[in-house]
Image 1 (spheres, one colour):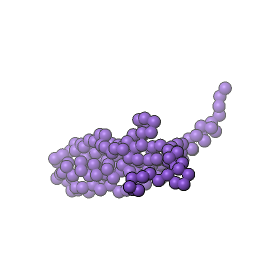
Image 2: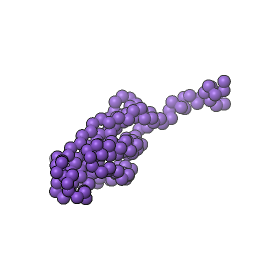
Image 3: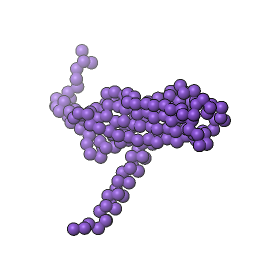
Image 4: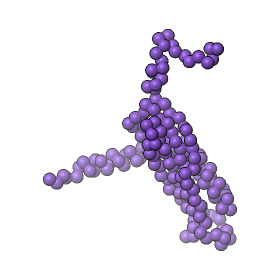
Length: 171
């Protein structure tokens, strides 16, 4: 029956330690919203397929309960042939994450970079599915470095804070 026992250690006080340890778990991954538009179909199908594809990406998070956060990754892809829009796709891929005993900068990085990184493969698959169902060639989005994006956002905030602090205060 040893496999059913919880290890307690020599002192038997590891339960209290386990409660204070950082904990992170994915509880649910889901598509919150999706849309596909092909405003110039069917004429666009007669054009030579050499699209310019642009992608906008955004992340947001909100606290659901004491230890639960929803993180939403929004991808907006626009594909154009010269000036004509072939298609536009928007996917909001979301997840509910349980987070315990993680605070401050670690929590901000977890919600701003780590969670979106986990959601991206699901969003990429949803985008590809919508595009192919729209009768266009498959679209496999390149990986995204969410850590770098998060660091850039932090630097921008720091620069804005410095500019705000340097501005003369009127009394």
